View 1 (cartoon, one colour):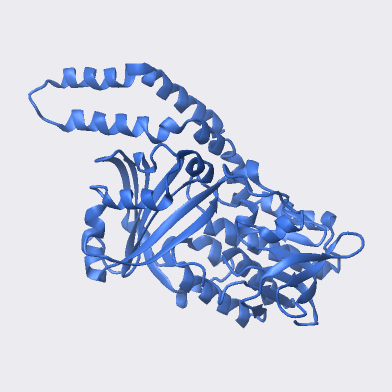
View 2 (cartoon, one colour):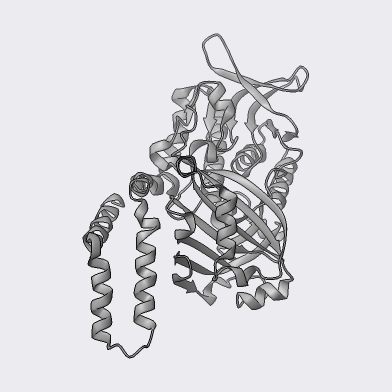
Length: 434
């Protein structure tokens, strides 16, 4: 193992770890980055959404050579029952801007590209290296890591944990509790390949334009969760995920949900004729603000998924990961310039800086939403059925006068106290957003 002492060791080469390592290395710090995969991104086959603003703050000219798939010009939100959906679409030519706001990406390609930028900045990367524990001095301060390599110890002034949602190093070292099954989702995803022109025809796209579809309803069989469809250049990413505790209680399988989602009448035509080449399962932190572990201590900082930095309401993750990684890196650089140690008191600057970003403001705003959704699962079953039934009644022309149809729709919402429940849930949801 490398015997030199480093200014910082970064565990993980995902978006948060890469952001932290790049930020520090770019400022001349001596950085060691450890990744357990064969190469950065080797464990990620899924398509994902990249939010440009967060990356632009780190690498302003990333668009010149980053492996971007399509820039998103249209967002579709579907509320589904077994045969239908009620949807809201937003499409704007304004998104065909010089510097687009969102892109679809393939994580395996993107993570590898980002890691290349980290190494160009001067960081040392070791892959196929698993961190087994944190090293501490007699006072309990973290001073380095032990790995599964021969003689596998490395020392640094601070260790940044960008190890992902499992956070095994943090758990083994007593920095965080084990994951609770009601604070994490299990998502399964497939990549379906189609000719570029077929994708553009089916989704009404031109050039590198892209569409994102996010769906909820009976597709999760009463469990708290969502589905999604992303358009890439020559593939479609499709997936679905639910809270782990719901899978345990229901006995349903993630793969079974995905198969049913793909067979839905609104989804099946989008995938027709495609070839599925890749399948992956991934844990996603969904607990939000109330499930966050301690974020810093004597000699250590937590970033990205390991800190529950995901906005489940808006389905945002990569921007929170990169922002927390960047802020962590900036904090370490700031301490280095001041020649101050990475004590818990000094690393509180990380928390202070985070509080000034959208990350903590958004997570705090939606802190009650996860618990609300877990306790009101009828939102994923009863309400979607009522909405699609109301639409079916309203749009079917069958000789019934419109006043009678209005009464029929109203009665369906009143039945079984559904209307008061719907109003009550809407009020509770509004209060939880305050």
